[in-house]
Structure formats: structure tokens, C-alpha cells
Amino acid sequence: GQNIDQPTEMTATEGAIVQINCTYQTSGFNGLFWYQQHAGEAPTFLSYNVLDGLEEKGRFSSFLSRSKGYSYLLLKELQMKDSASYLCAALSGGSYIPTFGRGTSLIVHP
Amino acid sequence: DGGITQSPKYLFRKEGQNVTLSCEQNLNHDAMYWYRQDPGQGLRLIYYSQIVNDFQKGDIAEGYSVSREKKESFPLTVTSAQKNPTAFYLCASSAGGAETQYFGPGTRLLVL
Image (cartoon, rainbow over all chains, first blue to last red; front, side, top):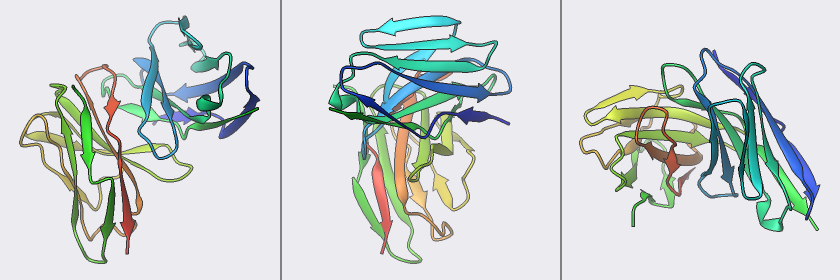
């Protein structure tokens, strides 16, 4: 079976840094996706990590540790528009079908 | 302008009625997927298709049916057997394998 865990909700202040964690247990592992989803809209792709380490894309960075079954999404210089749900999805070996976590609802306040 | 489209944006279903949700992509992607999203839940896979004329059940296929007669189209029918159809339905496509999925704007299905 497959299990993806991430916090349900987080709050942060505009301009701050926030880290959203994701742990996964899958039978085989091919990589981990992060998506952003604003309320009532489609998820949009943020990052895909296959190898251990940190990948940076502007204000957003994503980290993966395959040995620990752990990833995080780091958002810097938070803006109000970053208020959204962040979905972690693990790609298991063989099926190439991602398993999604329940999403972390991030609320950014002034 | 490549992308993935879904229609309608909102759909109302009466008791005992079948309804069909449209999903079209012009990204030349081989693989297409249907997910259901309920409040506070992650995306749950209904059906997926990795190639034309072939599709597989996902985790929650009961009460749903699909077809994949054309590469660019993957319609989902919500049948009367689906007793709790109210949800946000998302269609996605990818080039296949470990490639990234791209999502359509979604259809919100409501029961009258």
C-alpha cells in the first residue's frame, strides 16, 4: 500500500518563510511532485524531485530524502497570493500513477 | 495554445440520471486521468488511460465509466450507480511514464 502524510493546515505571515513537510511510504519510489491548488481551481505543477537534495525555483524550493521517505516544500518571501492548498504526490515504482496526499492548506496573513 | 479543457464548469444531476463530463487535450499526451476531489481529501483516482482504446480502473471506479476512442479525448460518465457523486472532478494528462501530470480546470458536479 501507499501512504502520504502532510499537515492539514498551516498559517504564516506575509514576507516570512514556511516549510511544508510530506512523508511517504510507497512500494518502490520514482519521484515526488508538489502542486499548488487555489480554491476551486486546478492544481498547478510546482516541482518534481527524483534525487536527494534541494532544488530551487525562485521563491519556491523542494527537498527530497529518499532514505527517510521525506520531502518538504519551502516558500520564501510569502505573498498573500501564496494562500492555497499544497499537494504532495509520490510516484511509486512500476505504475507511474502518483498517489496524492490530502493537501496542506496554507493561510498567509498580513 | 496547448492545454487541457473540461466542460461544463458546473453540472447538475438528477436522481437516477447518467451524466458525462468532457475532457479534451491538445498536448499530444498519451496518458489521461480522472480524479475526484472531496473537501478535505486528496485527489482520488477514478480511471486512467495510458494509450488510445485502453483504460484501467483506479481506486474508486465503481459507479463510473470511461472511453478512450481518440487520443485527445477521455470522457467520464457518472452513472446512477454512483450514490454520492457530488464532488469536484479533475482531468489530467501526461506524456506517460514518470512525466508530470497537467490538470484541466475541473467540473463541479452537484446533485439536485
